[in-house]
Amino acid sequence: MIDALIDKIIKMQNPTCVGLDTDFSYLPADMREDISTFEGAAEKIIEFNMNIVDKVCDIVPAVKVQIAYYEMYGYEGLRAFDYTVNYARGRGMTVIADCKRNDIGSTASCYSKAYLGKVDIGGKTLKAFPADMLTVNGYLGSDGIKPFVEDIKANDKSIFVLVKTSNPSSGELQNLKLEDGSYLYEKMGDLVSGWGSDVVGKYGYSEVGAVVGATHPEEAARLRARMPHTFFLIPGYGAQGGSAEMLKVCFDKRGLGGIVNSSRGILCAYKKPEYSGMNYYDAARAACLDMQQDLLSAIGRIG
Amino acid sequence: MIDALIDKIIKMQNPTCVGLDTDFSYLPADMREDISTFEGAAEKIIEFNMNIVDKVCDIVPAVKVQIAYYEMYGYEGLRAFDYTVNYARGRGMTVIADCKRNDIGSTASCYSKAYLGKVDIGGKTLKAFPADMLTVNGYLGSDGIKPFVEDIKANDKSIFVLVKTSNPSSGELQNLKLEDGSYLYEKMGDLVSGWGSDVVGKYGYSEVGAVVGATHPEEAARLRARMPHTFFLIPGYGAQGGSAEMLKVCFDKRGLGGIVNSSRGILCAYKKPEYSGMNYYDAARAACLDMQQDLLSAIGRIG
Image (cartoon, rainbow over all chains, first blue to last red; front, side, top):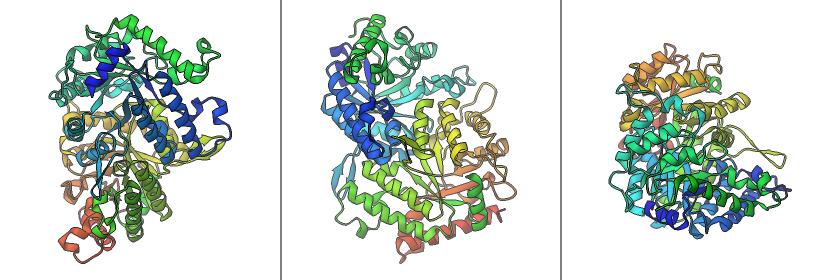
């Protein structure tokens, strides 16, 4: 799946994904009118997401759907998550389910079935939330990752493991110094490299990727050097303070090596002065084009 | 909420919870007959869980509902999760949502709303999956934990943060040695102690607890000494290899300090020779009573 994503990134000259962290409050006021149930909110979120996807699917290769924003609306919210995942895939976009799941092996296997695999019930094969890629947390070590790697191989999927996250306090644990002088996030990076060493695709990047925040350029540069075969999912651009200049260290000489996410910067573009007078989906498209130009000016031509 | 749980543990003389990791395949064959949809499976899982809860709620203080086993059946599975959470609470049981959620602050706040808080839609206050307690992963540091602590205070809830997990590979990251000679899991323990320092209840235990596996007694003993005000959620008993002898180091002189989970050992007791001839819920009750005796023989009288 990583090869297919990189193919699209090169074709569109756009190493970005739109984060569908669709908080109900992000929707224009008229869409929120008279809604006071999870079911009603879920319907409107679906409508919003569909309009965003329709407007960006020819210029943006992927969406990242942050499941927390759907879970808070209960199982009706999860229905909207499911619909969104399927709709975006139907429009040709690569779908990254941002779930940061993690557990012991037997339980991780359930999560893997939910997002990357399939479930057998009474002889029938069913899929719960069929995404292309999934974010996971590696705190439990290799036996919590193995089930995902098996589904990667069986079903042509990818994962991104948290290595260095974009939030301000990420260093409290991730930047602890180990006995041998390396940092914890580097050790996590080494584990991730190992887990993905036998699923490297035609561009030299593995199906087992890493989450590396745009907000920590020093760590990102060290990780890029340390894990040359690991593709990065890069959050933190825009609203969180990461800039194109800061994150260009994540990319190789071909302009490959990562995909940059923006969520609020795209979904809420219509509230910004520079896109005033536009409806939310036209503003989202304009913001995507601006983000593309901003990144390409730092990274250069891709591929 | 931790005080209410400890009250029940003392009253019932039972420091255990039943793990409702209800894989559809765990159900007796006659309950699975002619079912081949997520909706059908979800209905039967609800029926199974209700019967288990009815049979154990007078002798077991809590259930731990592992959400991965519901996510793999899609949003229909999540409906069963929701129903189970509400049903068990209605029967007086403390409900631990085992979700191991984690993300940056703004997103962690959505997860917190989903399980411990509430959501406002159009002026109406709604709850998604209203549990009493939630498991979380602390890899992102304090700003990913803060939203949960706020909901703990606002709504009388608790969390358990992963410190030393029960799986075989947990040491790959958690037992790394740091520059100062301590282990990573100890450093995580220190963070957890700090996060919970101002929400300590009448028994001296905090609303911010820790997940500490029954399978690693040496680490559990070090953590018990290092974090005297932290209540432990203890997985790994039974099917994973943890014994009462191994996990008794988690408890203080009063017999307090932890709650031990068993999932498959209870749900699938009816398949074991020692409970043969019993239906699944009577076997579950018998297995709960046996587990209680086994633990009390190691821990002694509680309270």
